[in-house]
Length: 180
Image (cartoon, rainbow, N blue to C red):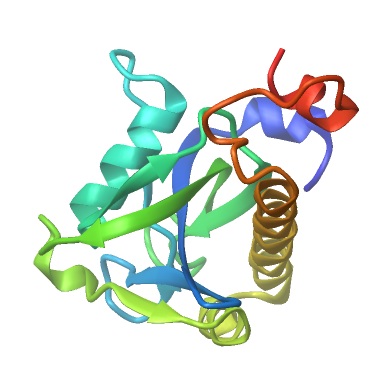
């Protein structure tokens, strides 16, 4: 992402980077943009009554019908654009806080035009790039890459500590960093 100064001057949105595991494979849940011609993660505005992760979780339910476990802290920041330069209002950029959300079930989304679709990481990158300027496409590639790294880390941690979800392993530096 760009400089911290740029991030502080742009409006903030939140996104739920929804995923599920299928054996050893990972799939991401994408939705159509409001205009329907691009793919994106469920995202939207913050809400003073909700934490940022709760706002992202709300967007996942509204736009994708996704229900699951969202991480309380964002794992990545990226720049997103909305609009086109030749129309009134032009292009507006946002900083997006991305929260990882493991989806346990789906239901019909509140927003019917979103068409939630599960895709592989490679297909997610392809769909997210289509119709976007290269700089925004690269931002979204980085989101997928960072999400995969984090999911892999979680898989290794849970594999090394099968009871890690229920108890804190003793005297382990990684576990100590995760469970203060």
